[in-house]
Image (cartoon, rainbow, N blue to C red; front, side, top):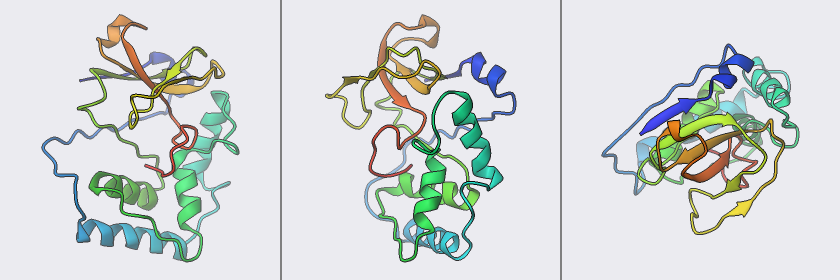
Length: 190
């Protein structure tokens, strides 16, 4: 697996940092009472100590980045902004989707940071964060049998997933997903 961040991302956003965790051999099925408890505690804490998602610097910096790459953060907010806003509502309970999603949601809520993930067994050989060309074909990773053409602003940011090497620039593209999970039309944040 090759992971690449296009150098334009660093040119446009010199303070951008991306952490990557690769976990293998994990058992993601079933419920974990420990993780479910941690998730519930994170949600309860966020509800007790709400933040202003419009002004909190941990979200504002990502909203500004969205504006700079041509996305409207009010219409397509950074994923962690949507998640934080959601869990701050009274009586909210996040469903336990699976262990990995619970871990990502706990970290996103507790750290007020964007956290996402991909199943490397189904992601191809290369993940690349880059600006969109405007001619992408969107193939949802959770439903590879479906695809749709999405003509987007060229400045939007996408993960590009390829079957071939990242060096094969534009060849072997198998899936695209927006950097904003809400923009992807997913029903849950992660």
